[in-house]
Length: 250
Image 1 (spheres, rainbow, N blue to C red):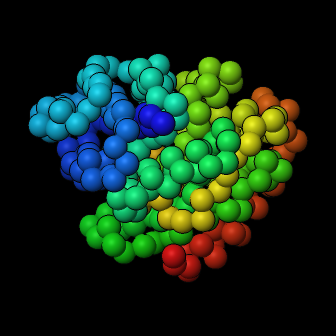
Image 2 (cartoon, rainbow, N blue to C red):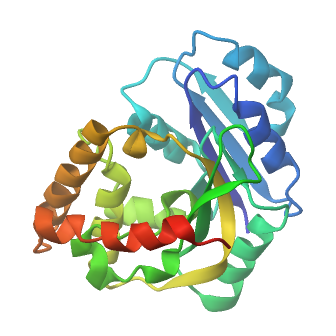
């Protein structure tokens, strides 16, 4: 089973090396690592060139945002399964893709996901928050609940059947994709009860109060576009669970 792993980046010279090494250290060997850079103006491209032997494909050119870049990666993917590793994220350990491949081989699923920890930017060992994807069910999409997207792997034919990310979303196109696919309740999926990804704090959707407002408005929009009944009050209710996550550790 070939896993297509897509990394998108822009001006990521400070963190990208950790991401690339994390992929190179995976024990699973049948990996197609694709990197899409948005015409970085720092030393990102020089860094990519140093690691290009480990990449199946890479390109650096202007794009229309992160979801446009992700779509470019999907269109280049030739694997059986597709997943994403952000340019400031790393795998929890070198066995993660082994676990993912085993889940697909053993269960006949179309998607799988696991847990994620947010970590301190300066100390990747210090956990700030634990994101437990086990709380996700299709019925909770209306509350804005989804699996941690960096842990989500789907069969390539899911994109062929349901389409790519919608690029007119600023922050929540990944949520909209989950709503579009999982709300149909026609695919089989599997939760891996392990931490798969370490994510540095400060991502696009958590950068500011303004970003959070945009995120939740887009979540409501995504639900409505996929005929899921919801509202801002229902979506904001998910933050009660997040308060407990801040105090919990793996």
